[in-house]
Image 1 (cartoon, rainbow, N blue to C red):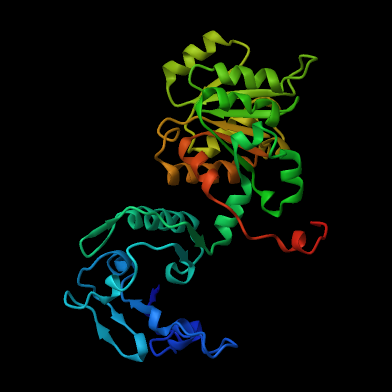
Image 2: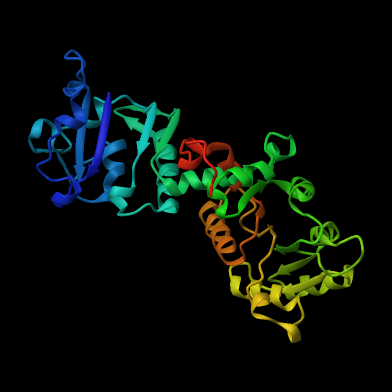
Length: 352
């Protein structure tokens, strides 16, 4: 059985009109097999309000929408529960193309919607039954999420040698934006340093706390000759924490700052070159690597906030790598897979 849900539309240019031909959605007459039809096993529903998709898919409630099955308008009320009862108690596969309904490819909204689909599906009720079976897969049409999936690396895959960051960055069209490495725990967070930091790099850690990791990053970036070309700056929002870090590690730069205020973070990079000798090139200086250990984002919650922060850091500071200590991000790295291949890779051509 299949349940097809979309928004009711009136724009003839979109190809999705109120009087659209439902057969192309719920009947395989165009397929070269006269015996292959599924009109009796599929329902097509158009929503007046996008926010009511839960009622249509998962509940047996009164739904303010119309079903255009068989080109006839059918009001769905409490006495007509065929929509949910005829569909199995669970969905094996869910397919989400939210772009046409949202008006654009909005990755955070789409990801949130996909997560809600999975969570709600596990608690779906059909009659007197409660089904806790999640779908095997959710297929999402989103170029933005495909790019994110290609950029996002599970730290364990990096540490066990499954992922080579140099090859990852050189072959992937998506890596005009930084590669994101998702870690859990302080030990795994620090174990990534040899894979991301090179001598002479400009490194930033936001959420540096008392500076122990910042000190390790500073040592990894500092040239053996002892010059100032490589460094790490530690930033934390707590003034007393920064004062303690400065006492513990006097050779490392620590500043009070907010991870979300990316302009201030960029100014710190310029300041590190010497405030009296700034040049236009210095003002555009960026960080090679950014590490992030932000309170509230390191646990299982805060996924959308973490993605928003990563997006802001990536666009403003333009690092090659961002390493984040975050359980929710590492879980996303485990689940998110891209089936989109940039055209130049698919055709075996050089990127340029």
